[in-house]
Image (cartoon, rainbow, N blue to C red; front, side, top):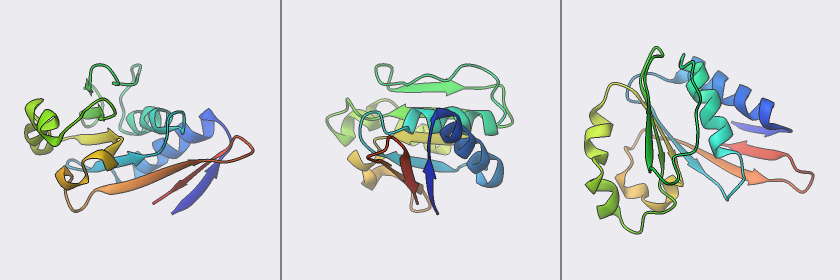
Length: 136
Protein backbone atom coordinates (compact mmCIF):
# COMPACT_ATOMS: atom_id res chain seq x y z
CA UNK A 1 0.00 0.00 0.00
CA UNK A 2 1.15 3.49 -0.80
CA UNK A 3 -1.05 6.53 -0.46
CA UNK A 4 -0.47 10.27 -0.79
CA UNK A 5 -2.65 12.38 1.49
CA UNK A 6 -3.03 16.12 1.13
CA UNK A 7 -4.38 17.23 4.50
CA UNK A 8 -5.26 16.21 8.05
CA UNK A 9 -8.79 15.13 7.13
CA UNK A 10 -7.45 12.73 4.48
CA UNK A 11 -4.92 11.32 6.98
CA UNK A 12 -7.65 10.66 9.52
CA UNK A 13 -9.84 9.08 6.81
CA UNK A 14 -6.96 6.79 5.85
CA UNK A 15 -6.62 5.69 9.48
CA UNK A 16 -10.35 5.11 9.75
CA UNK A 17 -10.37 2.91 6.65
CA UNK A 18 -7.36 0.90 7.88
CA UNK A 19 -9.07 0.21 11.20
CA UNK A 20 -12.42 -0.66 9.65
CA UNK A 21 -10.89 -2.99 7.07
CA UNK A 22 -8.21 -4.82 9.00
CA UNK A 23 -8.01 -4.10 12.69
CA UNK A 24 -8.88 -6.97 14.98
CA UNK A 25 -7.91 -7.75 18.54
CA UNK A 26 -4.15 -8.14 18.65
CA UNK A 27 -3.43 -5.89 15.66
CA UNK A 28 -0.32 -3.74 16.09
CA UNK A 29 0.17 -0.68 13.88
CA UNK A 30 3.79 0.57 13.89
CA UNK A 31 3.99 4.20 12.74
CA UNK A 32 7.38 5.47 11.55
CA UNK A 33 8.19 9.01 10.44
CA UNK A 34 9.59 12.33 11.58
CA UNK A 35 7.99 14.95 13.76
CA UNK A 36 4.86 16.38 12.14
CA UNK A 37 4.62 13.59 9.56
CA UNK A 38 1.01 12.69 10.45
CA UNK A 39 1.37 9.74 12.82
CA UNK A 40 -0.98 11.10 15.49
CA UNK A 41 -3.51 12.17 12.83
CA UNK A 42 -3.56 8.63 11.48
CA UNK A 43 -3.97 7.35 15.06
CA UNK A 44 -7.05 9.58 15.45
CA UNK A 45 -8.54 7.97 12.36
CA UNK A 46 -7.64 4.47 13.55
CA UNK A 47 -9.44 5.17 16.82
CA UNK A 48 -12.52 6.47 15.02
CA UNK A 49 -12.49 3.42 12.72
CA UNK A 50 -12.40 1.19 15.80
CA UNK A 51 -15.46 2.96 17.16
CA UNK A 52 -13.87 5.17 19.80
CA UNK A 53 -15.99 8.33 20.02
CA UNK A 54 -13.71 10.52 22.17
CA UNK A 55 -10.71 12.77 21.71
CA UNK A 56 -7.37 11.19 20.77
CA UNK A 57 -4.18 13.06 21.63
CA UNK A 58 -0.48 12.36 21.34
CA UNK A 59 0.88 10.31 24.25
CA UNK A 60 4.36 11.89 23.96
CA UNK A 61 4.62 12.69 27.66
CA UNK A 62 2.33 10.01 29.07
CA UNK A 63 3.97 7.35 26.83
CA UNK A 64 0.66 5.50 26.44
CA UNK A 65 -3.01 6.46 26.30
CA UNK A 66 -5.77 3.90 26.66
CA UNK A 67 -9.00 4.41 24.76
CA UNK A 68 -11.97 2.27 25.71
CA UNK A 69 -15.56 2.51 24.59
CA UNK A 70 -15.25 1.46 20.95
CA UNK A 71 -15.65 -2.03 19.49
CA UNK A 72 -12.10 -2.78 20.71
CA UNK A 73 -9.85 -1.05 23.25
CA UNK A 74 -6.95 0.93 21.80
CA UNK A 75 -3.54 1.43 23.35
CA UNK A 76 -1.70 4.36 21.76
CA UNK A 77 2.05 4.50 22.46
CA UNK A 78 4.65 7.15 21.67
CA UNK A 79 8.17 5.78 22.12
CA UNK A 80 9.97 9.02 21.17
CA UNK A 81 11.22 9.82 24.68
CA UNK A 82 12.30 6.30 25.64
CA UNK A 83 16.02 5.61 25.74
CA UNK A 84 15.99 1.81 25.98
CA UNK A 85 13.87 -1.26 25.42
CA UNK A 86 14.00 -1.84 29.18
CA UNK A 87 12.05 1.39 29.71
CA UNK A 88 9.31 0.14 27.40
CA UNK A 89 9.20 -3.21 29.16
CA UNK A 90 9.02 -1.42 32.53
CA UNK A 91 5.72 0.27 31.60
CA UNK A 92 4.13 -3.11 30.92
CA UNK A 93 4.68 -3.55 27.18
CA UNK A 94 4.32 -7.33 27.37
CA UNK A 95 0.98 -7.02 29.17
CA UNK A 96 -0.34 -4.61 26.53
CA UNK A 97 0.57 -7.13 23.81
CA UNK A 98 -1.66 -9.65 25.59
CA UNK A 99 -4.65 -7.27 25.72
CA UNK A 100 -7.59 -8.00 23.38
CA UNK A 101 -7.27 -4.68 21.60
CA UNK A 102 -5.37 -2.66 19.00
CA UNK A 103 -1.93 -1.19 19.64
CA UNK A 104 -0.86 1.96 17.82
CA UNK A 105 2.87 2.59 18.25
CA UNK A 106 4.43 5.89 17.15
CA UNK A 107 8.25 5.83 16.71
CA UNK A 108 8.07 2.03 16.60
CA UNK A 109 11.38 1.85 14.74
CA UNK A 110 13.20 2.72 17.98
CA UNK A 111 12.55 -0.79 19.38
CA UNK A 112 11.54 -3.03 16.45
CA UNK A 113 12.77 -6.12 18.27
CA UNK A 114 9.90 -5.77 20.76
CA UNK A 115 7.13 -5.76 18.15
CA UNK A 116 5.37 -8.96 17.09
CA UNK A 117 6.22 -10.46 13.70
CA UNK A 118 2.78 -9.66 12.23
CA UNK A 119 3.01 -5.93 13.04
CA UNK A 120 1.59 -3.67 10.31
CA UNK A 121 4.36 -1.16 9.57
CA UNK A 122 3.36 2.23 8.13
CA UNK A 123 6.03 4.72 7.06
CA UNK A 124 5.32 8.45 6.74
CA UNK A 125 7.17 10.88 4.50
CA UNK A 126 6.59 14.64 4.31
CA UNK A 127 6.46 15.74 0.66
CA UNK A 128 7.80 19.02 -0.73
CA UNK A 129 4.25 20.25 -1.46
CA UNK A 130 3.16 19.66 2.15
CA UNK A 131 1.38 16.39 1.49
CA UNK A 132 2.33 13.10 3.13
CA UNK A 133 3.19 9.74 1.63
CA UNK A 134 2.14 6.75 3.72
CA UNK A 135 3.50 3.38 2.68
CA UNK A 136 3.35 -0.12 4.08
